[in-house]
Length: 159
Image 1 (cartoon, rainbow, N blue to C red):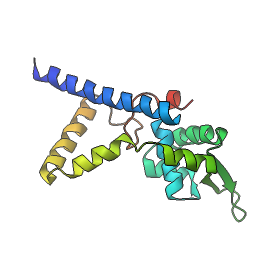
Image 2: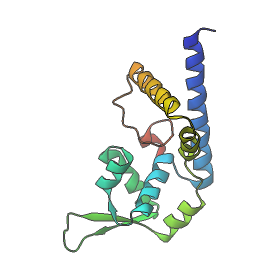
Image 3: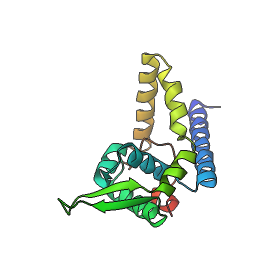
């Protein structure tokens, strides 16, 4: 097997592992990974704004806005407009949202992060530079991506 074939096989395995986790997450909690990530961000900073959520998780404001609308429609979060500044809208978890968040599995990347941080510094740097090179080779460096492991279109999966 050629080295490029081995690399592509390894990439397919990573994509498959992420896909399986995403399906499992949706099956058990009814959430997509971006939804879980946003719920966790709102829970961590009660009263956070949508723009700050987008900034913190490195997704476009439009993507976050769409996900927030779905979460609000499911009554997992609610918005509160500031009395002092009507332009400021803060996000809060509902009781239902908090209950769902507590029952939801940990994001796939948490286990990955523990294993990655256990590596020596040189190996972390090597993996990072290799993945950045792969992203560049696939013309993926400009894609909207959050530090959450999931495959597929965010818009499609958030319905």
